[in-house]
Image (cartoon, rainbow, N blue to C red):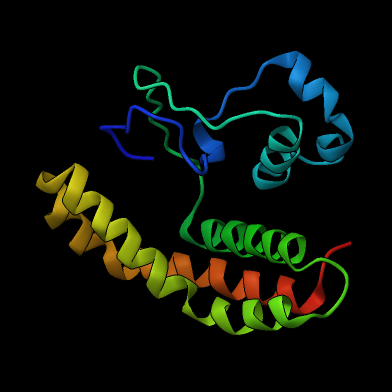
Length: 155
């Protein structure tokens, strides 16, 4: 999520900067009590009538204390969980499409990030371009994890 934020309801949120009303989280506790995975919690909240909204004044800056290897492992395991969750338990046409589409994940995400940087923070394009090779490796870790999770399926 990169400022400036659209001043409207959005279709997704990043877990890094998400906040929740306690009563709403408690109402879907079974989804997150064994581990908090943002897309699963967000789906449960939307099912209960929740909406994704941005708070333009609540910008969070963070530096995760990961080495490069830890970041790769973190993204791989996150991708695995996400792929398994999206895949479900049974094989169908949609799951087959997801298996093949996960091969495109690193490239698609890199293009989406590039588009957002160019549109919202063009002064940072040079930094983005310099970081692109490392970012591509990290996104590939996510994509491979998502592929493995999609093949394995949900729990």
